[in-house]
Length: 82
Image (cartoon, rainbow, N blue to C red; front, side, top):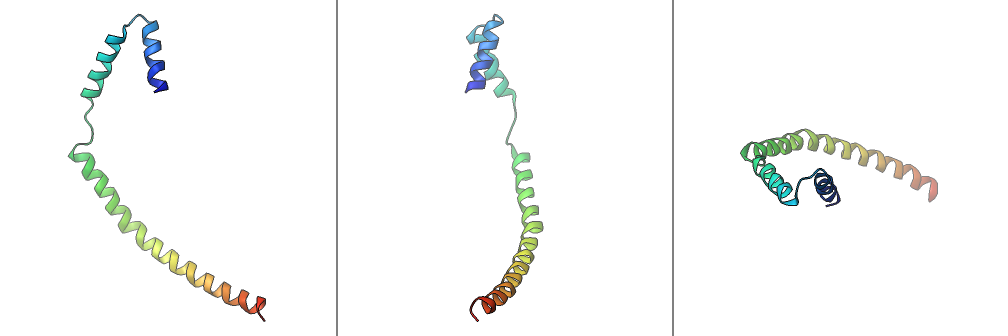
């Protein structure tokens, strides 16, 4: 909102009316094409690829971490409780 107000203030200082600014912003927003089918397919492909690549890596990492923590706790418990 602050950036929008600064934009309007700057344009008004240059002699443009608020009406012209609103028309220009509306035309700009209407001319932008976004979130069509290509963007949705791209996002879905990114999520699928991330799931295929990241999840197996996380599973191996978690298994290694649990194995190491179990060994560590076994050593610590014998030292602490003996």
